[in-house]
Image 1 (tube, rainbow, N blue to C red):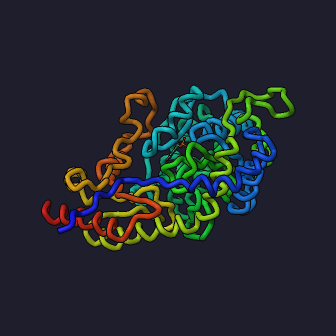
Image 2 (image 1 turned 135 degrees about the vertical axis):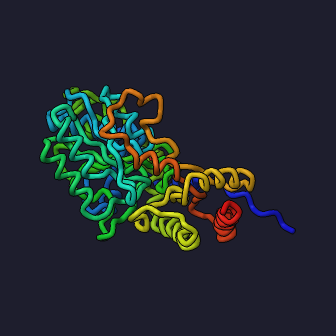
Image 3 (image 1 turned 90 degrees about the vertical axis):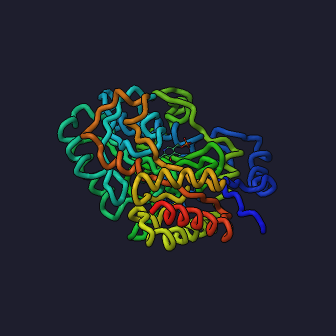
Length: 381
Ligand SMILES: *Cc1c(COP(=O)(O)O)cnc(C)c1O
């Protein structure tokens, strides 16, 4: 009998260097390796074409991209000197970590139990109570899934009414489409994407900030290069968040075949849904248009989740829990403000599962994952 295959949680895949070289040659010929060389300029154009004409500003990762975006947006809105940034607790630590690094105290709001995205009523309450102290709202597209149509507009309306800028951490959402067919990042607000090796659009350490506002674009561009807005005069506080030419060349190469990457991940996700929804597992609203960094779902109950983590370890199948611990349960955020007790974030964390995902997960691998899950559920009940 052949042994069942081990299936890793994630299996990142960057393009072969020989293909990256086709673009990187442009930089070599120009003897220009960063600071807006030919690969980065071409990448800006291609990304902008992909996102319906939005201005795309490459950065070295999404964490510094959030710092650039929040610095620029709060400077522009005149809210920079305030103390709080509203953000969900049900997200990755980098969301709140970047605003902490800017000296802001997070104010955590709860998420909706079906979409796992910021509950607009909670955001409205937080703004009503603390609006004058809020520098920015840093929303997310949880797990790279677009919020249901109209939800982000409601966040934006609440922010506009309170005079607070909206920045959206769409780290894993490059290529995501909502139920109206709109791609994440094509809207009017500032979005921040990650091109980390483990994201669906995997480049290494890289990312991008997007906006449709020319003044914000000018600010973001300046802040990511030492605050230089005109020439070498620093008119803004700045960091170095530039993307170098090798990463820009890699991103161009990834973009060439990205449609296939998304199709393959969505097919695996659909296979999981087809087999696991009837067994009591729940999927995120809108996830069909998501990018599927991993196979995110909710276990029927926390005990089943624990049994599945153990079964995955025993079978060498990478079954993981994401997000297992909302940010208000991390020691680093013990000093954050909470809009309420965040019961939905806690409940989602207790049931959270993430199944193996890769650009090239084979039929045998994904059926192995489903077998391990269904066998465990059967034994547990
Ligand atoms: C991955 C991720 C980040 C961090 O992205 P980097 O490019 O690694 O800095 C931030 N926020 C969320 C929600 C993420 O998933």
